Structures are given as structure tokens and as C-alpha cells.
Amino acid sequence: MAQSQLRPPTMADVARLAGVSHQTVSRVLGDHPNVRDRTRAKVLHAIEEMGYRRNFSARALVTRRTRTLGVVASDTTLYGPASTLFALEEAARAEGYLVSTVSLRRLTVDKVSEALEHLSQGGVEGVVAIAPQRSAVEALAELRHPFPVVTVGSGPSVGIPGVNVDQHLGARLATGHLLAAGHRTVWHLAGPEDWQEATDRAAGWRATLEKVGVAPPSTLRGDWSPLSGYRAGQELAGWVGRGLTAVFVANDQMALGVLRALREAGVRTPQDVAVVGFDDIPESEFFAPPLTTVRQDFAAVGKRSIALLLDLIEGREPSGASGIAIEPQLVVRASSFPYTSDQGAPPA
Image (cartoon, rainbow, N blue to C red; front, side, top):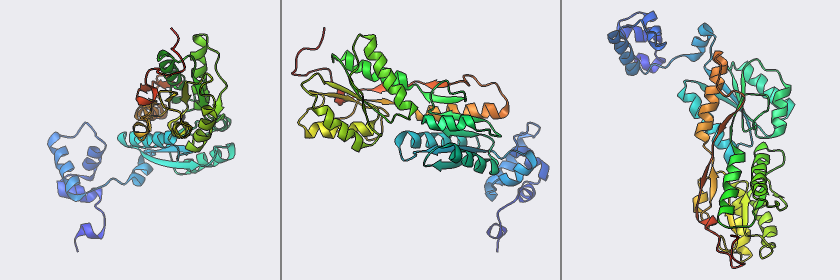
């Protein structure tokens, strides 16, 4: 039976095939500059031919570096946290790091403490916490941890280095778009109260209306689900003809429920009521009508978060450590066509 069938190839096997020393193979793997190009090519060819894979556990014993990062997350069934988690894992792999993830139902102090302890025992060099709820940030702030921690989605000024999409700006883009289309005011269906992103989106909506001298209507609140959007949409339908012509919904899933409720009530979108969502989920362009929404750059969030964490691990002075903001983008589709309501001409 061939050696490759009995056991995986070792560094010594690669050295024999390449006709070099064990130390030379180690230098090539470590990208050491003092290796001749010809020798490096021979070693890399031998690695590829044998299918050699580095033993990270053995390497960690020597270097005391595990090349492993931790992620603590909750609500990963939702589009935002799930997309953030995927982006973090992708960015970490691009930097040559493995990722160990702990998913929690709730980010309480006890649960977060257990998660950090678990990751510490696994030898992670740093942790990214996807912590969109204020309770999660409070839990992280109370705990001591033996490695750098970076937050995502926690908003600015939380006392922990973090990366966030500028939710306030995204809400201003959405609300301003509807006002520019001629709507006298914009109603808002907000997300859960404990979510910092929901708070920031509501604040951006309110600030945009107040800037043009419009008193914000009463806020409706959902839980990010299409069902909560549907129930809010039934309530909103009752205000059609009494000043409601535009709605900014805090996420696309709730907007889907709003669109269905309005349609069932005989309310046309966008002719009677324009609707704008947030997130730009893959399905949003296939809603009926296609949904105008705010796109978050999750890939940029992942890259900036991992870069910030690696800076902290390596002891480098990171730029924007107190809070890195990623700009969102408004994506205009059919659900918010310019104001064409039969209820009267738009304001001048």
C-alpha cells in the first residue's frame, strides 16, 4: 500500500521529495526571505504533488499562535447577522485564519461569559462579537477577556472597538428619498427596541423629518419578521386617505409583510402608498412591486472587522478603533416611484 494511503504526508516527506532539509521546508512555509527561488519552487512543487497540509496544532505549540479567531453571535437566522457572520468567516480565511463560532440565543452576561471562556480554552487570538442588541454590548462591557474584542453592529461610542454600517445615514437616505418624491411626511415601522440598529434607523428617520419642519408620525414597531410587518401593514392601511402616503420600514422582511397587507386592503404600491425597506435582501427585487431599499455592504464590514482585530492582536495602532462606519447605499426600485397619489398634488 502506498504511503499516501497509510497516513497524510509530513514535512519530512516533503523534504525528502524536494531533496532539501526539514528546516528549508519550514522556511518556505513561513515565507522566509532567505530561500533561493529555485529551492522555493522545488519545495512548493513537492507540497502540491504530495498534497501536504500544514499541521496547525503542531505549529501552534512552537509559535504560540493558533491562527484562530473567535466569533460570538446571536439571531443568525436573521439576514443581517447571518450575512455578517459569513463575511467575517470569509475575511478571516483570506488572512489565513480559522474561525471558531459560538452562536447564542441570547447575549446575556452569563452566556457571553461562557462563550468567551469556551473560545479562550480553544486558543483563539481574538474575538469578534456580532452584538446588535444593547444588552449584548452591556454584557461585553462588564466582562474581562484575555484577548482583543471587536464588536459589529453595536453602534458608535460603546467603549469597545467596533465596525458598524452607518444606520443613521441609511435611514436619512430612505426618508429623504421619499420626501424628495413629494410626500408630505413619512411613516416608520421600526425594529425591536433593544436593537441599536433599530434605534439608529428610527433616529435617522426622525431627524430627516424634523430638519424639514415635519412632525414625525407615531412610530409602529415590529420584531423584524414578515408577520409583524403584515400586522403593522393592516394598521397602516387604515390611515390611507388620512395623510399616509409613504412608509419607511426598518427591514425588508417586515416590508414584505407590509406590502401584502396593503395589497389585501386594496391599497396600491406605489400609487397610493410608497414603501422603502432596509437591507436589500436577495429577494427584495422580486417583491411585488420590487422593493426600494438600503443596501448594507457586509463584505466591507467583514474585512474591516477582521483587519481591526488583527491590528489589535499584533499590537498595531488601528485607525478608527473607536468606531469604523461603513456607508450604506440606497437602491431605488418600483415600490417608491415618484408621488402620484390621487389624494392631491404634492407640496411645492
